Image (tube, rainbow, N blue to C red; front, side):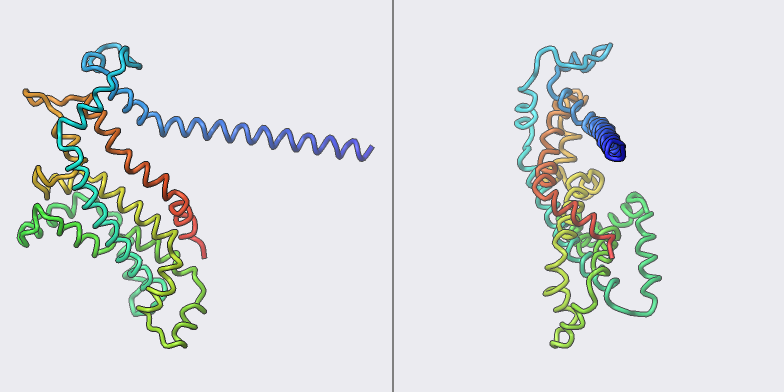
Length: 288
């Protein structure tokens, strides 16, 4: 009797596990669809004609797929030139801000100084400031220094570190064993050597996450390049939104959509290649 009841309980447990798994997978599929929906609509928009986009009611699917929209979007502007500008700026900023944020995060995590907690609180509080609040004063400073229409603003922004990335590195470095730096100090290594030789090599998950976040920020930034760079040196984000127009000055939405699809492909590729390091960095930064 007991064996029959235990077998029944085991069956009930298996059924509940399967039901819970089915519910979980269904929820994941729904959430994935919600996230992929806008991108799918963007792709469909890039495959339609001007008339289908202006039609009412809405044409959900293109009657005749317009693959040439992607070729036209690529050839009507210097697509590769604008992409090169975006790549240069994104690499400069992502590399510098990752290293500078790691250095600052190491200081907050492992060094002691009067007022350190207060400074860290001020740093986190600066995350609440919208970009628009500081953009105009920053532009005036760069204009006075003659840095408009150059890459120097992104160099200086990268060297100044980013509060959120500093927080990521601080959380990660704070969880490393104290014995690591104590052993290095006994061997005569200073804190600069401890950072470069011990802590930084162990932080590759956070380095990957920081680099991807910073690269995505810069690649997708529209306001700063529009304000600081001329038309020839501007980024792909600005070019996609401003250069696909008719002779009358009206936008061409199907070309903008096709160019936008090609514009987001590099970000998707970077994430797919480095997703393991990105997920590991985000998951370990809050662990002690």
